Amino acid sequence: MTTPPMLRQLRHDVWATERLVAHCRQLSTAQLELTVPGTYGTIRRTLAHIVTSDEGYLTRLLGALLHDPPFRLDHEVTLDEAAAHLAHVKDGVERLFGGGELDADRLLLDTPLRRPGDPRFEMNAWAPLTQFVHHGSDHRAQIGTILGANGLTTPDLQVWPYAMELGASREAKETR
Amino acid sequence: MTPPMLRQLRHDVWATEQLLERCRALTKEQLELTVPGTYGGIRRTFVHIVAAAERYLTRFMKMPEPLLSEDRDAEATLDEIAAHLPHLEEGVEKLFAGQEFDPDRVIRDPRRKPTDPPLLITAWVLVTQFAHHGSDHRAHIGTILGAHGLDTPEIDVWAYGNANDAVKETT
Image (cartoon, rainbow over all chains, first blue to last red; front, side, top):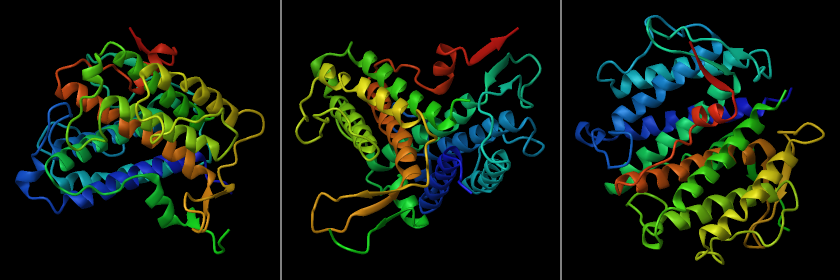
């Protein structure tokens, strides 16, 4: 059976965040607090923001909390904590596409994460789905900039190495 | 139903357009600004985003020639870069028009060095990279603008959804 392209996209996104978290485990506590102007903030907070946002998009799309209490940026999130929540993100992505291609035009009326007094947003399912991917690449790029600006190595998070790992991009056996 | 992957690619091209429009207000000197850890200057990063997007699409279809090239068009102006955006828009629509897009199709991709064996790339890899690559390098431009105290436009999907009536605040 064909895997929906959007599921491929989300799987790459989660893989890239996992790989970046693994890379950042080699950093010291002080290095995790590095930042550069024009980015979201420190490496550690940016990783936490990526993962809490991913959980937020999935909660809206699935119409149910991934766990209770939800993961929010209301405390100093450690790398271990962010990594542990990536497992929930991974599981949520697979559940979202459990029945094959999802109905991206479906209207989502609210999110279980909305707190009393917060505005309510209605949106088509494709919006949080598309935002999931855009948002992850956007903030991972900022972390890449922080690493590079501080003379630290950056992992290759493009789709090429991911596809190589899966055998979805490979050299032909013969030469032309 | 519009395929979700088409929505993703439409947003990608829209975001590049919005960012490029915003950068038209910059001076020549500002277009050459950069910060360490990014791809390079703002203008060259645009060349790279658009040239790469055209290359991804050429694996699926014939694109209008000449393609934008980082080597040949390193000094391209914003107008010259923007002239390629309709090609991306058309290419993305064409990719999903008619019969269903087959993500599992294997594409033979010749290498730059003719003696190297060609690459066999599954179609989903190219569309996934298209979306990832655009957001990645637009983030570089956003960082450069922010680091120099310049305004950055809203190019996330909330802004795009608002513009397309797909995200609405209700009372």
